[in-house]
Amino acid sequence: MLARMDIQKQEMDNRLEEVKYELEKVLRRECKLDVRLAEVCLHVFVATNDLRLYEYYVRKNNDLELNLMKAATTNGPNNINSAKASDSDTTESVNKSTVR
Image 1 (spheres, rainbow, N blue to C red):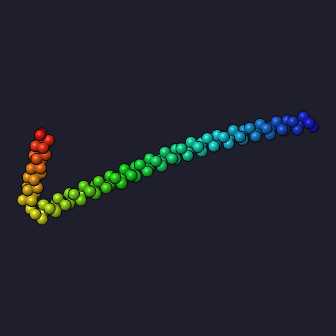
Image 2 (cartoon, helix red, strand yellow):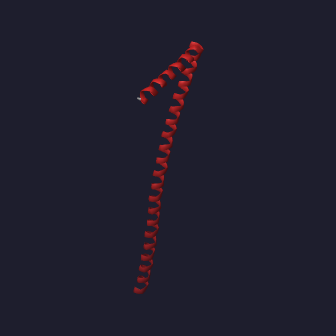
């Protein structure tokens, strides 16, 4: 009877070790998944911010193009030519100041 109880105790100890091992495996997997989830969340955050920044610059570029088109249609080609001339004057003055 005592031998039988020792065998049952040994079987229960073995089963306990198996359960502990399985628990450790599950906890390690959970930890790896938490790390992976954090990485994915970080990538999503970065991608979302990059997309917002891209949308901002596209909007600004579109606004600039619309303003240029409005100026061209409102003031005619003379305004565009004078704007180009003032740009070239500014460029020349900058070039002269950097040469000195």
